[in-house]
Image 1 (cartoon, rainbow, N blue to C red):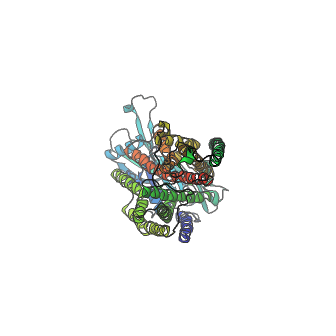
Image 2: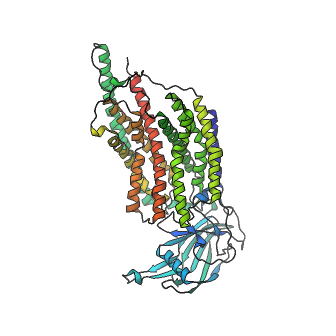
Image 3: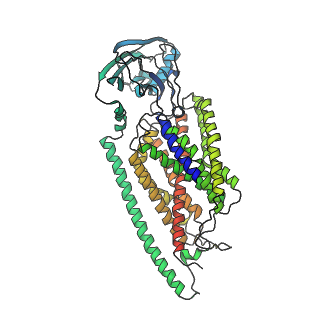
Amino acid sequence: MKNLSTILVLAVLITCCVPHVRSDASDHRYNDGDAVPLYANKVGPFHNPSETYRYFDLPFCSAGDVKEKREALGEVLNGDRLVSAPYKLEFRKEKDTEVACRRKLTKEEVAQFRTAVKKDYYFQMYYDDLPIWGFLGKVDKEGKTDPSEYKYFLYKHIQFEVMYNKDRVIEIGAKMDPHSVVDLTEDKDVDADFMYTVKWRETNIPFENRMDKYSQSSSLPHHLEIHWFSIINSCVTVLLLTGFLATILMRVLKNDFMKYAQDEEAADDQEETGWKYIHGDVFRFPKHKSLFAAAHGSGTQLFTLTIFIFMLALVGVFYPYNRGALFTALVVIYALTSGIAGYTATSFYCQLEGTNWVRNLLLTGCLFCGPLFLTFCFLNTVAIAYSATAALPFGTIVVIVLIWTLVTSPLLVLGGIAGKNSKAEFQAPCRTTKYPREIPPLPWYRTTIPQMAMAGFLPFSAIYIELYYIFASVWGHRIYTIYSILFIVFIILLIVTAFITVALTYFQLAAEDHEWWWRSFLCGGSTGLFIYGYCLYYYYARSDMSGFMQTSFFFGYMACICYGFFLMLGTVGFRAALLFVRHIYKSIKCE
């Protein structure tokens, strides 16, 4: 365990350092006329955030040699592909309608631009690490009902407005001149002069606060009202639920304890009923114990990963447009916490009297990474077919494989060895009988599927409103920065999951069904299935995403995320149920 604590400390230290590695321009001071780096990043349909392409995949002209910027692992995973832009924005040097480059567009290139304008393509650039966006063109639909009559125009003049404080760049905005356009309606060769204007304005905003503008976009009054409404709604749900369940359970358990105490004082030939009746079976180990222990280990690792991500978010590591910070943190922390999965799974497997701990360790390593790897292979192939920036370069894939081979796997094995040698015994307050009792017939609503539906609905209802903002950030262009509210919602989710699982476990035991192990895990994790159901609603009702690639990415990666939630919340539900079951059977005298 000492080694594992060292691993966790390293995880925090490395992750805190890695995301802060920013572009070499971010802390530069400039003199008048100095070249300030401007990089063109990507282009793509506005409503399809995963479908992005390199800037020069479209036939833009360049002012000279195009130089690619070296990027960190997280930036590549984020789909960023920065190259030198054709525009030159020297520090405090104003320019008025300067020609960046000239190009004669062929019929094929005109058709390519027209398709991009029709699909609402936008571009993204970075100037001294500050993001710039703009649309490529516009569609003139005024007074036209037939789409064949629409006119398509390409913007060719960008108007930059840059704000500075002494010798540092503070803010930049870009507007497209609606009167300086290239007509793309017909398939014919056209001349295009790509121009730009640069205006400089002084500001008193300090350099340290230049990202506040992006943070405040998610902290606007109407957004905060909805966020706080979400929190209040969730808190009321939690208070009502916990109060309701606590009252019922305390009353019922009190009656049970009194009844069983009277039974012990009465004649011995009285027949036991209820949850005490199955005390010889309740701690009988579950079927498929290796899979159960592996799921428990993977869920514990994902829970630890989530806590570390929240810690980094709350201290301000994931500020807006810290490109790739989140992806870097996820990769690094997941690799460094794999020892937790190995230790938890193997020690629990040995407590369940399992013998083949090596197979259990392999199962633990593949339980989450396996589906994620298969999903990645399919989606990366789709991205390669589309020539999108979401396709990872071969070098990046090699780096990830090396991290998995040299960090994740060894730590998993070390954790497994530590778990095997921990010699921990399963603490069961009751002796388990040699032969299991027969479970009485149960009504349909007490079977696994209805119980999962009941268990998943309440936690999902507590996080439902906040989910929209998370989806709009991950699968849209909104910025999410209110991590404190998100952390509160996460805590509420854990509390509701634990309470509802405990309640359902009690009702299951009261019905003399002693196979509660897997049921508690499935009921706890069922919220992940509800979140995936919300994905269907969000895709078809709340977003404008379309196309095979975007659809594949959305449902493919959301399936992996929801599967991760299933394992994590399933572990929380099982742990809560285990504590509850141990407590109630310790409180009675079992023969």
